[in-house]
Image (cartoon, rainbow, N blue to C red; front, side, top):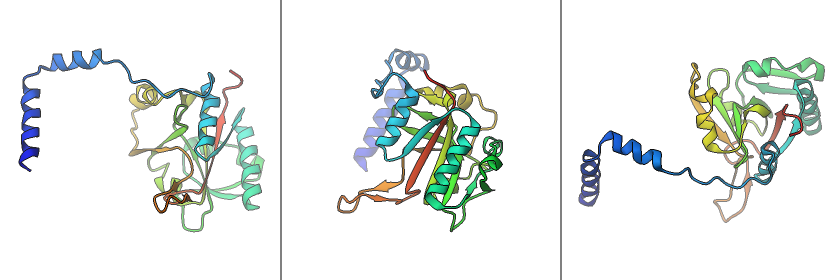
Length: 217
């Protein structure tokens, strides 16, 4: 404890001798950290490739109608039925579910729900990650309880690097700040015990991502 107190005392002493302006100048002079190399120039495709490396599946669709068609095929092929749970996110409510014969239940996931559908606020190409806001309309439980999860994201909300997320106007200037933010980079897995990979350790065993729009770039 004496060593800890000595270190903290030195830190406090050093900070008191440095002006706010000097600290800001040093921060401004720091070069940005290098980002991970992308597998290609198109960062929408890079996102998909990195998601697949993380154990997820992913595809691009042109619009909301194609998204529902892709969801119908995915859900029917895996479960033979068309029921799932989705949050009250306005972007999910606006999808033409009836055209695909899908039967969403809007609310939070409950025991027995096999699949959930969520809408990401954005995605990060360099890590193959999606970030989702957590609030009353987007419950965290929907990202954790079900065996299978489908996440949709608009192509315009895909960023090449993590740093770009924090600078994005949608996050920085939003009037309705979320309760939390969850990063998802693939199905839940762990290899802590005997180096044996186990899926579904802390969340879904399978993740499928649909990137809406963007076209060929």
